[in-house]
Length: 390
Image 1: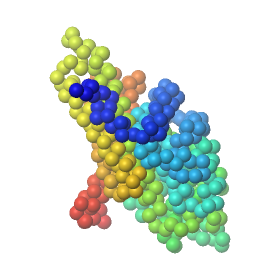
Image 2: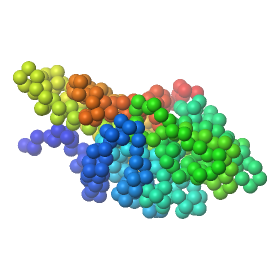
Image 3: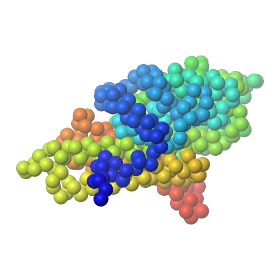
Image 4: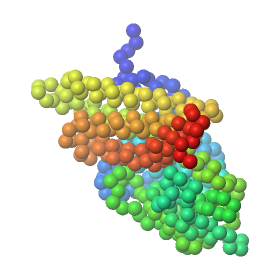
């Protein structure tokens, strides 16, 4: 007879981790508990984030661009990166997003599509946390359809001149460098834009009710003049930005498992200690049904993430696998968070507990890096061969 399953990892999913992956999990979990969790409610309430301090700490831990090779990056497995995202998002989606935008969007774009000069200039600084990056793709009128972007880059002699606006850009107000995608006469191209370039402005997006422990910006480019060397040399069209988004979505499908796990644990601990009608809430049938449903969703999403991670490590990952994971796991996480909120009663809306914060954050995660609807249509096209959105 085996021992009773662990309520915190019921299917023993982490038993499949390698020793290195387990060490990374433990290091990130300890750092998150010591440096992030005690402060996140305050950051969320104030809508502020000590970005430079966070970047240095995360850089020293080796988490920035950790799944990339060279240039000071750790070169870990995709699964290790996913587990790190899970442990960060167990604290807050905004903190995982901070790392994801740095490593999977800005750094990945430069690493995968940049020139040697661009890589050598930016990646060592970014992996150490000495420079922050952002990723300018989404526009006020171009979200799910990035091909309709209006930002344009035109040649002027040996230079490029960029004009346009990007919206909902994480880390935009604190970034040292922006990867900006623009229409050109040669198709969509990517540009590495130092944020101190004349004509570049980042305006803070305020009044958010979700992802408040994250810095969001509108980028305005007015006659931003760049040398030809600022452009990514080879890639044309949407292949460039979409490859980066796939990396970020991978971090999300792993990360939300952490958010769901945190909500489930909070509900379990609360209902085990809170008494009503002479016994703990956890002793009532309706409460146990909710806990069982949450347990299933947390572990099911954990298995999905683990399998997709192994496919990625084996070089067998298709972008529709990522769509599957993003759709399924965010859906599970948001349902777990909503259920946990009800189980904590009035305390569920307090920042003293994480569930309402996670619940609000997951509303944004449901939308960004591809809406639920777009991922559903991608899966529909995958199994039918018919595109329903064109």
